Image 1 (tube, rainbow, N blue to C red):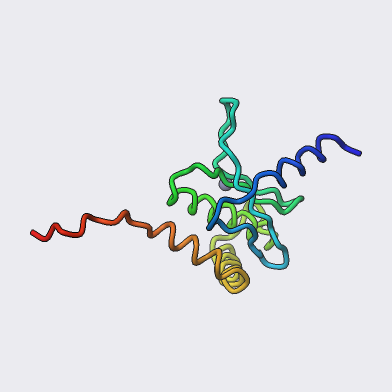
Image 2: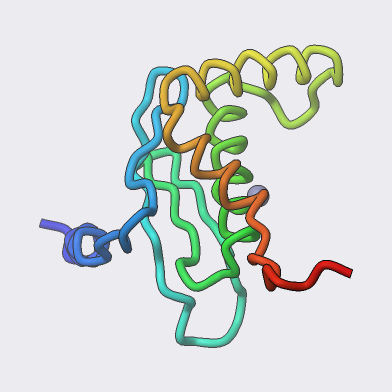
Length: 134
Ligand SMILES: [Zn+2]
């Protein structure tokens, strides 16, 4: 057994999603697990989010402000769509846009609750004091 892989899987299992955060998102023909990770303790290369195509895990830093946290999840979903669409590194812009619009529309269809969550978080506005009409 590969110890590194095992411990990786273990820590993935351990990071239970805080309430209200999506835990899975379907992207094209694949289901990705969403891993809400703690910020890295070691300073160095900081990743707000990661997309592991091989293990189908999207990791997003749990402690980000809610809007950037949702945007980071969206960013990683787009990486997963690109990967699923086989978008090469050099791709014609028109073809890429077509692939992305199909990819995102499909992803919304497959996991509407995740997209509702992303939209809710991105459009979040702190409540204004109610009794201030001037
Ligand atoms: Zn990226």
